[in-house]
Length: 254
Length: 156
Image 1: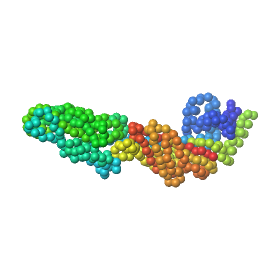
Image 2 (image 1 turned 180 degrees about the vertical axis):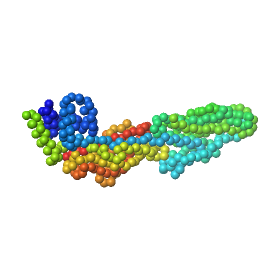
Image 3 (image 1 turned 30 degrees about the horizontal axis):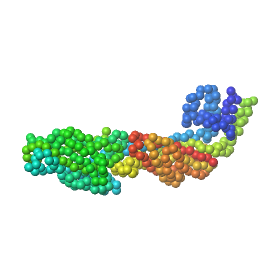
Image 4 (image 1 turned 135 degrees about the vertical axis):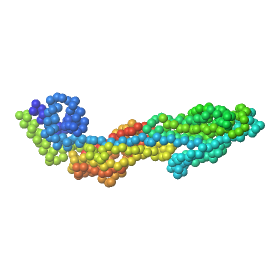
């Protein structure tokens, strides 16, 4: 047994060890310092204990060879979850996005309206709404995307950050527009969706349904924008007066 | 008899360690266990304030680390120290750093190594402060990811 121990040491410091033997012994001598610990546990033979004893005797030499390598670990976090939705008026601070602008808050609630001539009430002649939104330019790059006041700018983007879910833009309305006790179904109002320079709409055209309508599912890190043109179907005779109702646009990121 | 032969051989080899370099010209892992901090977390921030087809999906982060490399085993030798970054599921992460001059500034992507020192090893430790900038694709980084850095030395 004794000769076996020294034979092992001798091979360890042999100037021309075979690769496999050298690696094995170096690993075994790195007791508790690196992967060598695993190898020690894997071997319960007397030979292994002999090698441990040898390592104790020549520990300084073992350390010189081993160089236990820790790893500096840097943890990186996902980006923050962010959403942006603009319907009509909006705000970007410091210029458009493409020149470093950042999203701001704008509490304006724009109004789209139409006055139906008395002779046309209930004739089913569609009536185009106009808005008090003057937004023509996209905050993305300043491009003249919409043609107000007939069109209302709608733009949105989302960054899921640590998630992978896509954002959804919806619009919800009550069942009716109201004028005291008189009402007009919200479903009498529809919209088209277009944008200058974009032949295919990102946000869907549709008809209010007195509930929620999905306009778009936005892929992660994607900016979508379109211009809505609203139309009143004018399908029924209603008492004169001003009928109002609010459509609420929402972006959600699960 | 065999015992004595072995003992003499071991003693001679030990003496060799005491009297001169016994490290073969090869690549060895370098212990960076003393690095401060040993583990860092970088809060990544979007490079831009909204998505674009270009670099609008990029996340950037920065930190500083005092890198302390144990070069004691190679004192008196000449070599080249490299920093390596393991492959990561976070995609094409890019790491770049500047230093205070002891180590080399550089650039690194997963799976490759970058030279941080070349020359004689004169001290037991090779120390420098690295100002590290990390860039990652926000679309690929859906959860925290650990970047594992390792050091190794090519000894002449």
